Length: 344
Ligand code: MG
Image: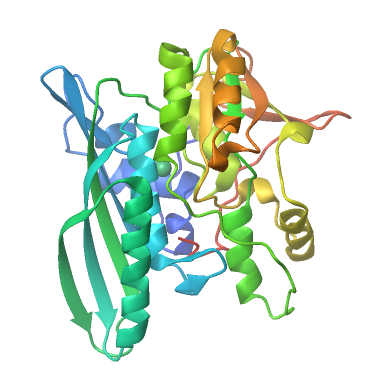
């Protein structure tokens, strides 16, 4: 990224937070030695998934591990999260019709059967919503204390005739978000606090492939970049898109949709909703001439009612995200995220 950093001798929680530390870990340890995918997208691009050219289309593939704690939370559970996370990463690459998913479950000795059945019912429901299915998997059980309850790993595949990356932005492009920011992360954090928060805030975990399909249909080739603002929230997503595209992004703070409940919890915990994970949202970069049509298409979908235009790309300060507060401008800083482990 902009400021290369050296990976520490020990891998600590910050390396799983989705920010600069994690990107450094991938760049320095995981990605070296794996060649580029000619005509496609490989590991080095560190996008939402890979794209492998097959004939006149691309096979999109993505994989996620899920360690969320608590396993069940307002608005979802680890099963729903696993399906949606994978379906949404496929959609961010342009593959909005997921062909199939795999799911590996690693369980701790003693895990309740009834809870497992509930999680799998949730997985089935989320697959139905997304129009996909689980076709293969794996099961492992570890001794009590060797694992905290359950880990799910999902892989998804889909085909697309056009790959959308997270690096296609140019000066003048417009940035949209498909809905309110920070719901998932703040709903999870609210369950963990000892302040006994009385809140109605729920996670936004949802498969947004249908919503993204509408945006792509409305914007056509004018949709030039997409990313789901998961770990690190909108701040990390915008930083990565700005850095990879070589543009600056000016974010209009007052235009970013944030629920009152999310704002209240964020203020109580001292956490900016802009640095917190979402699990049913997308950041979409479009050419200015299609912005209105894409916004209209998003708002016509049940999962896009609160969609908004939140910013624009500029040639100045490439790699930076500048927040326009209405009173002045400041740089939006990416959270390291050590304070929010196991959010997804
Ligand atoms: Mg992603």
